[in-house]
Length: 380
Image (cartoon, rainbow, N blue to C red; front, side):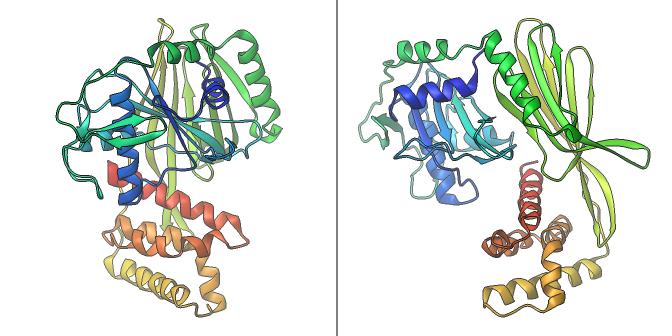
């Protein structure tokens, strides 16, 4: 098994950006430009590496190779984006890799582009990139191919195999990973580990609570230590956890409702299945059915939210009541979105900077959680 943290360190330490790996400070998949640039790099790296893996590291500065991290990214549908826009799309995988010096909620993103030995190109227009465009790597740049017949060339196989070989996991790295996980989580979160099939070591932590005789865990953190990958992280949502000899099952719930009359709704189930052949797979099942409310009430909530957004946009002062309502603005707009007010997403994005700069950081966490749920609902 490859230790992904060690792999990232090896890539950053021994190689500048080149034809088999790229690095970015962040991904911006919510914008047309950001989405198109991501697809361009996937296309170029796939075409430049027909017989070996290629990588994109996210959360690293370009000039200094400084690891700054990004938020945990749990969007398992990123493959769908690649499939929708690329002809001969490569299989890709996004993983969240924790680093000791980063804040608990920050990780380094690792995108692995698996070889498919076929020429990838754009199926349709994406931002300023035209349909049928082919991209390739020239050094650290993803370039459009302007010729007639693009030829796949295998030039990186040996060096990538060497880098991956030097990132293989061992007993020392595994033990250190378990000790680090337990040390980095307070006793209240009851950090623990479980071994599956005598090969896989999974650590998890969460604060236990009971609601209506049901056991939930909040602030859940789950890592597959062998690969040094964070599989799940929950800043606010509550989850239920079960496991047996071969599988670890996470069911995520979200609280939705008007004012204090919130109810729990299952959002998504994640099943990590550990196989006898030294491999594992992760499957997700979307469970969410949005609650429906009286349209008159939702319309009132939406209009009140719009009034606050417009005031902020025009730099007008908020009343005390409106300032207090900011804390529930993300939840309210999420509720409106789920009940057919699709513009609620765009309106909420208009006040992102304002919310981010508030002294109460939990308001911004609520914003990110609302946007995450909206993204999941759209994809599914």
